[in-house]
Length: 463
Image (cartoon, rainbow, N blue to C red; front, side):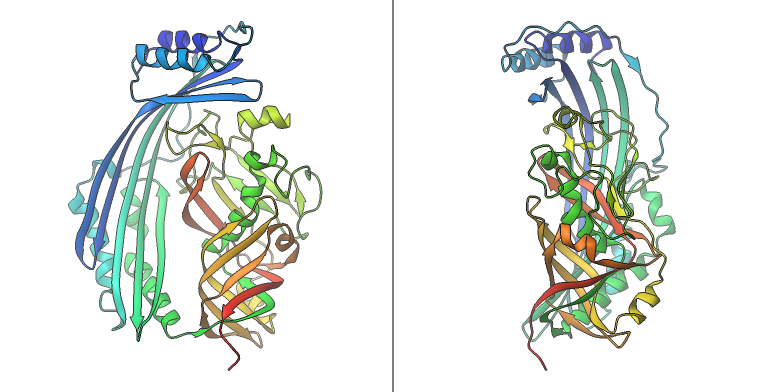
C-alpha cells in the first residue's frame, strides 16, 4: 500500500485544477465461488480483485477513474489524467492524515477465504442430501457458497485515513420440481458479514427441507386468479417490497435529481401511522452491514419513515452537496471500479403490535404472500411489479389452498398508506442489489404486514 506521504501528494495533485475534494479508495479482495449441482461439484472459482479508484469533486461535479497499478507513480498518473476534466482555479487545502481506529462489530472468527473447498463442500452436501430424496418430483438441486473477503483503505482531503475488512459469506439453495411439463422452483439463502462459524448455529437440514417443500407445494398448486384483494406479506424476504418499492426512491441518486416520487417530501406523511422504516448498517454481522461505508464514514442507523412521516433520505457526499443536507453513511460500491453513491444496507419495517395469527384471523378473504421473489420499480412513478414464489389464499381467517403464478402490482407511494396491520415477527432475507455503483450485499426485512387492498395478478380462472 502507498505511504501516507505519497497519498497526500497524490491528493494535492487532484486539487490543482479546481477540485475541492479528492479521495483514494484502495481495495484487495479474494472471492470464492463453489457450486454443487445434483450432488456433483460443478463450479469452483477464485477471483482476486486488486486496485484503486480516485475521485475528484468540484462542488457537485465529479470525475472518477480506476487502475490496477497501485504504485505511487501509477496513482499519480491517474490523478494527473483526471485533473484534465476541470479547469478552475486551484483550491488551497491543508490537511494531515489522522488514522481512524474503528471498533470491528462484524468479526469473522473463521474467515471463509482460509478454508479448504473440502470443508465448504461438506455444508453443500448437507443441504443436498437433505432434499435429494425429499420427493419424487424434485428434478434438480443446486447449492452454492459464495465468500468475499474485501479489505479497503480510504484516504481523502479531509485528512481521513481509515481501513475496514468485510467478510461476506452466503450459502444459497435452489430446488426445482417438475411434473407433466410443469416446472416450479424455490430458493433461499443464509448470508452474513461473518465467517464460517455462521453454520455452527444453523440447522441446514431444516433450511433445505423448507426450500424443497415450497417447490413441491407450488408444483401442485392452482394458478392464481387475478383480482384486487387484501394481501398479507410474510416477514424476512417479504421486505423486498420495501426495498424495491420505496427504498430505491429514497436514495439520493434519484432524490437529488428530483426524479424520485419522494423528492421534496421530507417531513410529510407518506405512509400509514403504524409504519416505521429503518436502514441500519451497524447491525452486528448482518449481510448488509459494514464498519464504514465506502467513503470512510462510520455506518449508522437511519430512520427513514417514523410513524408514517418521511424523516430521512439515504445520502452520500456528492449528493449531499446537491441537496444541501448531511450525509447518512450510505455510500457504497461493488469494488474500486465503481464510484460510490447512496445505497441501502439492511432495510426493514420495524415490529408492530399484532401477531401473525391475529393478522390472518382478521382477514376474511385475501392472499398470503409467504415467499416473495424478485421485482422491479420505477423510482420516478413508484410503480412496481413483484413475483410471489409461494402464495396461498386466505378464507374466513384461515390460510387455505396454495396458488402459483401470483404477482403483486401497485405503486410504492400508495402501498405505504395501505399497511393496516404489522406483526411482531421481524426477520430479514439476504439479497444482492444492483444499481449504478454495482452489485452489493443488502438485507431486506420486515415483520408480517397486511395491505388493505392491492392488485394480485395471475393467469387462473374461477373454478
